Amino acid sequence: MERILLIDFGSTYTKVTAVDLQEQRLLGTASAYTTVQTDINEGLHHALQNLFEKTGKLAFDRRYACSSAAGGLKMISCGLVPELTAEAARMASLGAGAKVMKVYSYQLTEEDAEEIERLSPDIFLLTGGTDGGNKDTIIDNARILAGIPQDFPIIIAGNRSAAGACRKILENAGKQAVVCENVMPRFNELNIEPAQSEIRKIFLQRIIKAKGLSEASQLISGIMMPTPAAVLEAMKLLAAGTETETGLGDLAAVDVGGATTDVYSMSSGEPTRINTVLKGLPEPYAKRTVEGDIGMRYSAKGIAEAAGIPVLSRISGLEPARTESLVEWISEKTDTLPDTKELKALDFALASMAVKTGMTRHAGHIEKVYTPVGETYLQEGKDLSDVGRIVVTGGSLIHADRVKDIAACALFDPAEPYSLKPLQAEILVDRAYILSAMGLLSQYEPDTALKIMKKELLSYGTAK
Image (cartoon, rainbow, N blue to C red; front, side, top):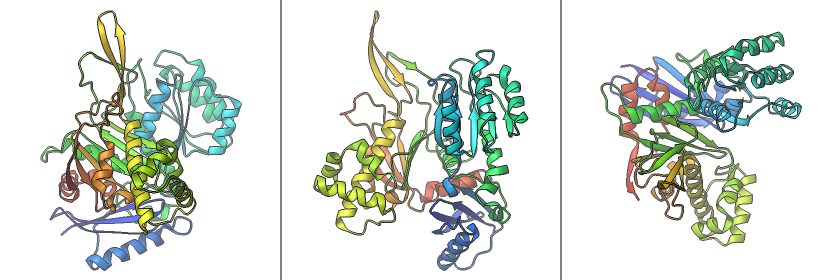
C-alpha cells in the first residue's frame, strides 16, 4: 500500500488530502487554520491531527504541496499595446497561478515606478514588441525597473532583439533577470508557456523561501506550485483525460472565495455561430481569470457594486436597507458564518451573483456589425455556448444548500443576448474540496487523480 499526502497551504486554511495510490481512492480530507505568521508547520500539524481523527494514524510515502499563503504569488506585468502584448502578459501570469496586481501598457513613468515599488510584487513580467518589432519601449521600461530599489525577479519575455539589452540593464542594477521566449513573437500569436515555466521556476527558487515555506518544503517530496495553478492542472486533466482514462470534454469551473472569484475554462472557444469573425487575441485552451473585486467576505461590497443592492435584495428576499447593512457587516467581520436565516439568504444571493459576474467576465461576447455582404458578428473572447459541464468549488458553494441554483447562474441569460456563456451544463460539485490536491497529484499520478475526481465530484444534474 502506497499513501500520498497532498497539502494546500491556503491564506486562511491549510488543507490536507490523503490518497491510497494502489486502490486509487481518497482516504480522507481535513483542514486547520494556516499559521504563516508564526510557523506554517503548526497549521499543517493541526490539519494532520484532524485528518487522523477521521482516518486513524497514517504514514505517507510521499508528500506534495501547493500554496497560496501570504497573499499567493503576486505579479505585475507590462507590455506594449493593451490589447496585444500587455494582454498576453496578463494571460501568462494568470495561467501560471498568479494574482495579477497590475498590468501596464506602453512606456512606464516615474509615477508607475513609485506604484510598483509600493505594490512590491513577487515577480515582474516584462514584455513588449513582436520579434523584430518595437525595441525602444521595452528597453526604456527595463531602465525604469532598474531604478526601483525592491529586490524582485524580472522575467523578460518580449522582442528577442531587445531581450539581451534589457537583461544587461537589469543585471547591472543588481536585479535577477531571466530571458525567455516572447509571449507574442508574431502579431496575434500567443506563446505564453515558456513564460509560465519561468514563473514556476522562480516560484520554487525564491518565493517559497520568501513566504516562510522553506521549512515546510523540507518535509515535502515533490515540487510546490501556486494553488490556482494546481486547480488549473486538475481542470485540464479532467477535461482532456490521459492515454488510458477518458476525460469529460470541454468544461468550465468557478471557485468563489472570500476575497476573489476564479473562473476556469477548458475549451478552444471557437465560434459556434455562422457569419462570426474573431476579434482580438486568440484564447488559450486552458484559461483562468481572477475577479479580485468579487468575493464572499473581503470583497462582498464588490459583488454589491457589480450586481446592485436591488438585485441582491430581490434574490435574498431581504429589504434593500437590510441587505446593504448586512453586506457592510460581513465585509468588516470577514469571519462571519451564515448561521442565521438572514445571513444564509444573503450568502445565497452573494454566491449567485459572484458566479454570474465571474462567468460573464470570463466568457466571450459577440457584437453585431453590418458589412457590404450583410450582417456579421465579431466575437471577442471564448464562445463557451457548447460547454457541457461546470465544476463549482469554494467554501461558500460546496456547503451551500442550493448549490445547483447558484451554479446555474453561470449559464446563459436571455437578458444578456450577446454573452457567450454555456447554454446548459451538468453541475459538478467539489464537495470534498480536492481540486488543488488532484492538480498536484496529476503531475505524478494522472490516472489516479482523474479517477478520484470522476468519483468524488458529485453531479447535481443538468441546469438550463
